[in-house]
Structures are given as structure tokens and as C-alpha cells.
Length: 546
Image 1 (cartoon, rainbow, N blue to C red):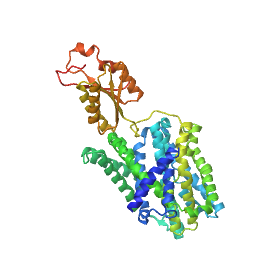
Image 2: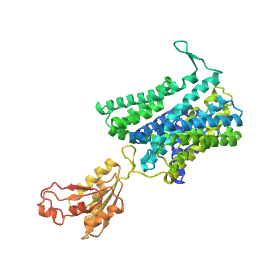
Image 3: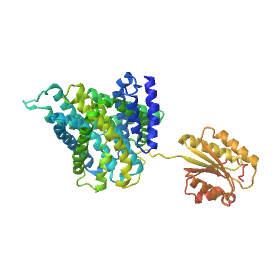
Image 4: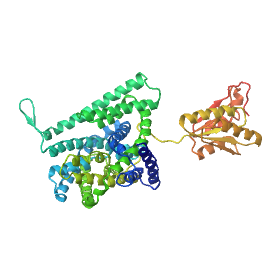
């Protein structure tokens, strides 16, 4: 099993990165790795690993839904009115019905079996959609109208709906019928009639349990300080979210995935600093879980069953997407402030299939449903076609169809490169400057440019300064630069040229005001630099900066 983990991590990472360098989403490379490592090809994934694949997928989906919740924006959702709610029901419903009707014609399915296929195929993939929407939010595409938030919320609600209908149809088709439920007073209801009540209960309880879990997390991590760092915060938060998901499997009265997503959302409202720390932690968890998720997705695809249904399967996917789902998108965005370009963006942004199909695609076959092998094959085909295409098209068409707005760093992780410029001379103040910049770089995992402007060449002193830099910045990636010129102008010029985050330089300490104000390099840089400046003051009263 350890060898399987090694193959999955190493090959999944590097082939994914290779795909990304070719301009394709990394998940394409990961899925291909899974297909290559699967028992059908080179058989390098152990049976033990395949046996726990469902549990690992559950863990990965929990992580990505926590990321989604931690990235939602309540104000943008409120601004959209009912659009997100309609996106949660209409597109998935219309696609499932279109697929059901098409399957009746192509495969001679009855309507209920066709609808079972529609529920499998109509579900949206959080593993593809969530990273894509969060990436758009971090870049600002569509954020002014809350489009990524509406898609994130709608996809979560649609999966709740389709999984409920799927469970109902599966029990009916697998057992040959379902028992009626007799209520007090002799009223008889079937599970189909109870479906709206079940759906409302799953959503409401999911949101309530998510809120309670968020409050518990704030009490444990903020008010009682049970943890000491962001890593421990993330472990506790992930454990509580996973508990919600597992509990929902045992007690199917609420949506565990919706509860996990709601927990992340309520954390932003209850304690924004904690949410920011957790956002970074779950970003790190996703880097590893993403590899396992998509490699194991590829490993579960049954290649041998794809050939016979390739063309009819593609026809069903196309009809469900281009007729059913697009009609649902149109109805969902009626009376909204979305223009036709933003509505068209739903085609690449809200159509990817992967996680749900891999999780439930084989269940009808395992339970003896007629046509189960066809359902499994089309589920696998939907993953191969829509997951890579959706991930690629989202980032390709967003700049063409969406408007770019201001990024809200309180809702998403904004990746920034920290580059500090340390301006030093050969005086004793250089030690204090280098010590300070080393501390800042370690805290931010940043890089450093050490800049020395040479006015009077003195090679031994410069060599000593380089040696001192190497000693104090031994564990930091840095570059030592020497140039000639006017000191304030060159400091600002080099900082702007390399896009430095901040300038760190020396300041006269305990000097008469006349000496501080007249000819002060630090004062000149402070007054003219568009980049933040940090001044390091010398504490030695006998020192006078040259």
C-alpha cells in the first residue's frame, strides 16, 4: 500500500504539473495517471488502496467544500436574490429529465431508470467547480455580481437534490417497489410525495448543524485557545467537518456536505481572522487531497465498457447539457442583472462532472438495477469528457465573458510573492538591517534582495558585507546586488524594478534634529517611495551613520 501511495503522489503531482505547463488543467494529468496505474493497465495500485478509495474521496470532497464555504460572500449572495437558489434546482432538474427522455429512446429505458441515470449524470462536481470558482474570485472575474458565489451555492444545493432523488429511485428499482408511509390520521404518503419535505429537512438541518459546528469551533479555538498555531486549527476544523459528513452517512436526515460548506461560511461571519487562518490551512490540505482524488477517479474508470456506448453516451451528455441544463440556466437567471455573456459562462463554469459520478455511478449495477452497466459506463464517460473540459474552459472563457472586479482578500486566499529589499552600507547598522529583514523573510516565507550602493569603492568592506549577509541569511533565498548611483533614487528604482514588497533600511538614531533632516537618505526614500518602507533604528548613542 505504501508503494501505491508513492506512485499516486509522485506521478500524480509531476504529470499534473506537466499538463499545467502544456496549458491544460492539472487534473487531466492526474486522471490519466490513475488510468495508467489502474488494474486495467499496469496494475500499480494495490487492492487495499482501491478499497479505501471511497473514504479518501469523501475526505477530499469535505476539504474542497470547506474551502468553498470559507470563500463564500454573504453580501454577494444576498445581492443575487433567488438566482443561487434557482441554480441549485432548475439546471440539475432539467438536465436529469432531458437525459431520462433521451435514454428512453436510445437505450429503451423506462422513465424511472432513465431518471436514475439523469440523477447520476446531472450532479455537479465540487472537486472541479469549487477550485475553479475560488480561482476566479482570487482574480476578480465576475465578483462584482457575485457570479462565482452563486455557482458555488447552486452546485451544492443541486447535489443535495439529485442525491435524494437518486436514493429514492434506487430503493424503488432495486426492491421492485417502496413501502407506503402511513401518518397519524390514516393519511398515506409515498416516498415520492415526501421528497420535498426530505429535501427541505436535509438543507435546513445541514445549515443548522454547520452553524452549530462553526460556533463550537470558535469556542474551542478562539475563546478557550485549545490550539497554538494554524496547523492545529486546521486539524480540529477538518476533524469536525469530517464528523459532520460521516454522521450524515449514518443518519441521513441532513446533508453532511452542505453542513461542512455551511460551517466554513458561518466561520467568516462569526470570526473572520479564524476563517482566514483556516483558509490557508485547507488550501494546503487540498494540494495533497486533490492528487488522491483525481488519480483514484482515473483508476476507477472502467475503460473496457466505454467502447460500446461511446457515441450514444456522448449524445446523451450533449442533449442533457445543451438542451436540459441550458434551459435550466436560462430560467435560473431570468430577471437577474446577468448579461448574455455572463449567462453563457455557465456552460463552462457549471457543467463539470467528476466526484459524484465516481462515488455513485457503480451503485445501480451493484444493486442489480437493469441497465446498471450502461449507467456506470456513461458516468465514467461524463468524467472523462466534462471534468477536463470544464476545468480548462472555466479559466479560458472567464476573461472573455465576465467582467473583472475588485478582489476581496477577506473571502479568498490571494497568493502574493514576498520580496524584501534591504538597503545596506558598510557601517555597523548593516547587522541590524540584515537581522530585521531575515526575521521578516522567515515569517512570510519571502525572498530578499540585499542592495549596496557603492560610492567609494572599498573591496574588503564589500566582501565583509557579503560574508555577513551570507551568514545572517543562510536559510533565506537572497540576491546580493551592488550598483553605483544616487542612493535614494537607486533604492527606489531597484525596488520597483524587482516588484519588492517592502524596503528595509537604516535610520539615524538619537541624532540632533538638524542632522536627521538635512541630507537624510531614509527621509528622502520615505518621502518619495511608492513602496512601504521599514526603518531600522540604531540604538547605540555613540553611532553616527555615514
